Image (cartoon, rainbow, N blue to C red; front, side, top):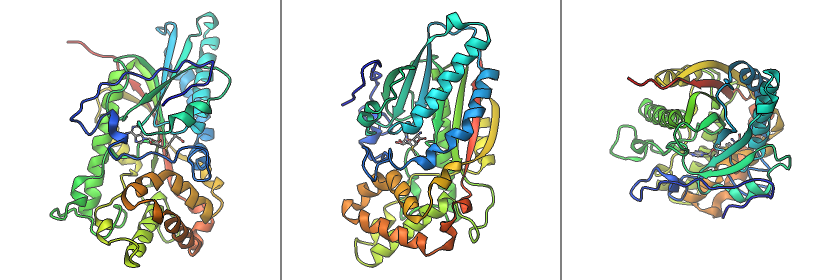
Amino acid sequence: MLSCRSGFNLRVQNQVVDPDSSNDVRGGMLGQYVMNGGEGPNSYAQNSSYQGGVIDVAKPILEEEISRKLDIKHISSTFRIADFGCSTGRNSFAAMQIIVEAIKRKFETDGKVMQIPDFQVFFNDKVTNDFNTLFSSLPPQGLYHVTGVPGSFHSRLLPRASLHFGYSCFSLHWLSEVPKAVLDNTSPAWNSGKVHYFGARREVCEEYANQYAKDIKSFLDSRAEELVPGGLMALLVPAVPASWNPNSAYTVLTEVYHLGSCLVDMAKKGRFYEDKIDSFNYSVYFPVPQELKAIIEKSDNYIMERMEILDNPGKRSLTGPKERASYLRAVNEGMLVNHFGTEIMDELFDRYTKKLKASPLFSDPNSDKTILIFVLLQRKPIMFF
Ligand SMILES: C[S@@+](CC[C@H](N)C(=O)[O-])C[C@H]1O[C@@H](n2cnc3c(N)ncnc32)[C@H](O)[C@@H]1O
C-alpha cells in the first residue's frame, strides 16, 4: 500500500503490465531486490550516508548546470522531475530540494517570477521498494507535489515527452538480471565458485559488461521517450577508476569480493550446500569512466553536456569495518536473503566485519577509491523526416 502525508498529492502512475514479461513493473516480485526498508538499525534509511555524501559535491554542479542549460521558455504550469531509483528517500529528498530550488532561482534571475510553475516529483523505484517509509518521511516544506512510480527503470514508466528533468543517483549499477551465462555450467562464462566478476575469468567480465551496456541502453532509450526535447537528465553513477592498486587501495568491487569470500567460507563450513554459490551471482556492475562514456555516446538521443569524476565524501562517514558492514548489509541483504535465507545473515555480516578488521586497508576510508561519475545529458530535439 502507498501512503502520503497531507499537503502532497500522491498518485500511483498507471502501469502497462505484460503478464508474460519478466522485465516489467512486477520485476521486484520476480526476484529483483530492493534496499532494506523501514527505519530500523539495518535499514537503508539509517545506513545510506555513504550514498548521501555525494549530494553535497553534486549540489554546486547541479545548480550551475540548471542555471546555464535549462531552457525555461516553453515550460507551462507544471514542471516534472523524476528520481529513478529513489529508495526510501532521505537522499532523494535532499536532491529534489536542490533541483527545485535551483529551477525556481532560474525563473527569478530570468525575470519570470510570475511564471514559476508548480513542481511535480515522480519518485521511482522497484515495486517492492518501501514506498510507505518513503512517503511517511516526506519533508514538510511542500515544495513539490509527489507521485510514486513503481516499476523498473529499464523500461518506460512515464508518458511520452512529459518529463523536464530526470535524475538518478547510485542506482544505475544495478543490473536488470545476472547475466545468464555466468550461472550456466555449460557456458565458458560459468562463474563457478565465485559470486561476482572481480578477479574472475575474462569471459565472466565480458558477460557482466555486456549486460551493463544493454541495461544502460534500455534506461537511456526509455528516458529519451519520456523527456521533453531539450529536457535535462543528471546521472550520478558509481564506478571504479581505470586503474587502482588492490594492495594499497580498495573499491566497492573489493567489498563485494570479500562478502563473496565469506559466503564461500560458510559453504565450506557446511552452513549451506556449496552449489548454492554456483547458482548465485551479484547483479551489480561498476564501469570505468571511459566505458560509460562510450555506452552513452552510442545513443543518438542526447547531447552530453558534462561528464565529471567526483570523489564521494560520503565514504568518510563510514569510520570503520562495522559501519562498512552495515552499509553493505542495508544494500545487499534483500538479494542475499532471497538466495541463502535469513538464517545466515547475522553470521555472514559478522564474518564480513571480521574480515575487514583483519585488513589495515579498511581502517582508512580514504583508501576507498570508488568514484562517482556525474553526467549531464540533454534530450536532443526530435526530428521528423
Ligand atoms: C543504492 S540505492 C540508491 C537510492 C538513492 N538514489 C540514494 O542515492 O540514496 C539504489 C536504488 O535503485 C533501485 N533500483 C535498482 N534497479 C532498479 C530498477 N531497475 N528500477 C527502479 N529502481 C531500481 C534500488 O531498488 C534502490 O532503491
